[in-house]
Picture 1 (cartoon, helix red, strand yellow):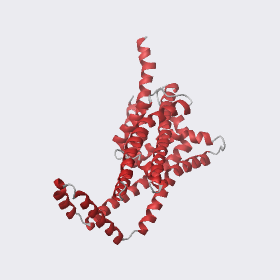
Picture 2: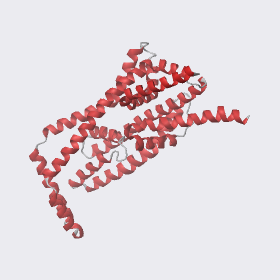
Picture 3: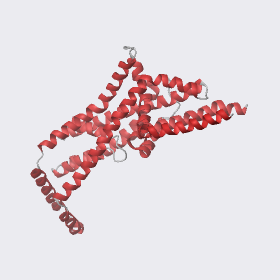
Picture 4: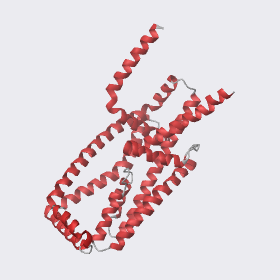
Length: 346
């Protein structure tokens, strides 16, 4: 008895030491683990053509990086080339022209003209430039942190792809549950994450394509803006508004107010509401019924709201954390209902 107590104390102390040692990487490890669980089927599919575990793991990660980072790098490259062509005098000219255009518009609104005119006079090009510089530096810092975290996640993802099956088998031996119960939980969580991964990918492609087509007819670069729109559609709360709203303002400034109104209604109603709130749950249901070998006993609307709740609680990565927690909770409830509650009733 004393040896068990002593072992328990030692185990708790060692566990706490391990937590302190790795706590800075725990969140990245969690994201990598969930990504591995949700995309492990890609590795299983590729293993039909190549039996080398390390090679297949590397190819799977490269495929995921291509889908995520190639469009992002394309956007960054076009932004960099665009910034190289800009000059300070040109920006100042556009700024003065914009102020003059706003003053001409508010001159027809005498009840707000004095107030808005005084506000515009206080706004200078230098103040706007310094404010934009602060925003740019903040975005740069967060972007650098995002890429560093992404690199760490990729490293852990490779580890989980290579040795995740061995780790899973070891955990099964340690957990005081039946193998069927562990398999049920693993199936629920992995299937839910697979649904989230595929439905999010299709949703991004649909939204980006829909926006790229309409802005192409309005004379803009449909490919570039479509990719930007698709990426920004995953941003919590504001979403793709940061893309279509400036385009609408540019069209309005160019005197194409009808096109601006059409684009705003198209983006807010068709893309923002129909595709994101109606088509996306439908896609989740299609993936659940057609793609998974055994459809999950979970409503597509539960997964949809789990994604929204996860984004609100954890930010961008809540897309996979929210559904994972929800699926784990529902799986544990089913095990309790089928195995424990049924036994007590007998």
